[in-house]
Structures are given as structure tokens and as C-alpha cells.
Image (cartoon, rainbow, N blue to C red):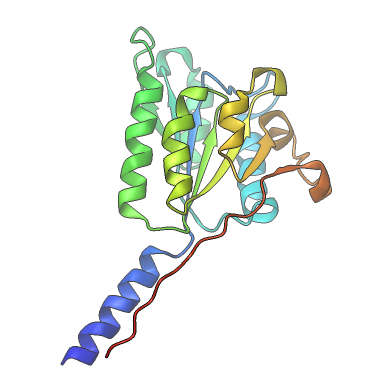
Length: 195
């Protein structure tokens, strides 16, 4: 009957809008720091997203890199930690950026707001797609390289920004006033009642 159909649709929508999180990591732009173990860096990243950001369950953590430039030991550790390695040719200009943008859009198609999209990069080429996703209600978390390498345009579209160096070293537990937060977005919801 119609009531049963309506309930099924409502449950499906609720499951799609469950606050899931996906991570897109530009390895060339934000490599693992020298002297930091890959396993420690990933553990600290997941902890920061869970505890400091409250990003919801991590659906996928994708790393984009020319894998011929990533050592076999690091590749193996990342794979064992559940990181999906996306091999992009280093000789093709902006290959990683394009692959990441396509995957971000597919993520948005598969997951409704308030899903959280985490970008580990400082590249301003991501500004337009993140701005559009932010306008549609997605929560944008930026994990960026040093401030001197961070595009102010990219920073402006993020709801929250964390330093990649701090995240790797588990130094994100600073008081909230010391972290860079954008004021919360206000959204208007229109509902119609049956006549």
C-alpha cells in the first residue's frame, strides 16, 4: 500500500544522508613527512577525523599518486590500512587533480548531504568543485600543507581546515579557537503538507 511505499522511500533517503565521510588525498601535494611512519600518519588522520572533526564513518580513503614514485614499503602499509591507492601517471599534467575531481563528483552522486568530503591538498584547482559541493550542503574539511603552500581561495571554501603536518604528528587536539573554522552554513528546508 502507499503508506508502506512512503516509509520505504523515507528509510532509503535517511540511509543515503547518514553523514558518511570520504577522504581524497593528493599524495604529491601532501606527502607523508620525512621521519613519520605511514601507519602512524594514517592512524592519526583517522583519529582526527573521528574525534576532532566528528566526520562520521569513513566510507573510503583514496590516495592519488604516481605509484612508481612511492616506495613499496609505504604502498604496502597504506594498502594494509585500507587506503585505496589510485595510480595516476606522473607525466600527464594534472592527472591526479582530474581523477580526484571526477571521484568527488561520483561521491556526491552516491551520497546525499550532510556527507563530509575531506581533501588532503593545498591545490586551488579544487576550489570550484568544493565550492559547488559546499553550496549543496556537503561538509568540506581541508587538510592542507604548510600555510605558505595553502591557497587562500581553497581555504575559503572549507568548513574546517587542519594542518597535514599536525595531523600526521597527532597535534590536532588544540583548543577549538586555535583551529581554523568557517561559520556554520544555514540551510533552508521547504516542506509541503498534503492538502
